[in-house]
Picture (cartoon, rainbow, N blue to C red):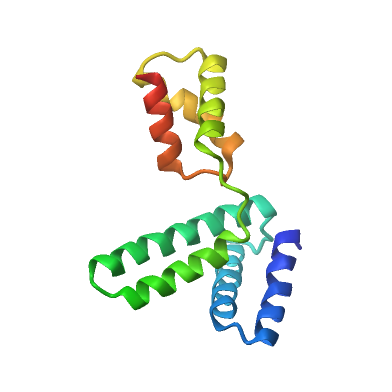
Length: 150
């Protein structure tokens, strides 16, 4: 079993004992999503830490989008609940890259590939994405690549 999955399960037990309803509910949801992902497909498999981080990133993004939708709909209470869940999930994600760090990684990838102009964006993204791996949102990375190639 992956180290991150063990940590999630142990933290769930701690949250239940502490009667932390937000953390308990969020961790249960995340563990259920991991189990669903492991059972998906033709054979049962166990997710490694990188796959779990990808799943957690996806879940955090869902919470962020839901909070924005609730805000637009005038439902501040539900938006706050979604943000609280997103904060719990973000505790298990790697630290996000600063704008400066992201800019340096993109510049290095452009230099490595010798890319020029907006048409080479795909080349640069192929090199940058594995280096970033959950430490920056895809839209943010794409915007930085586009900015530097322009």
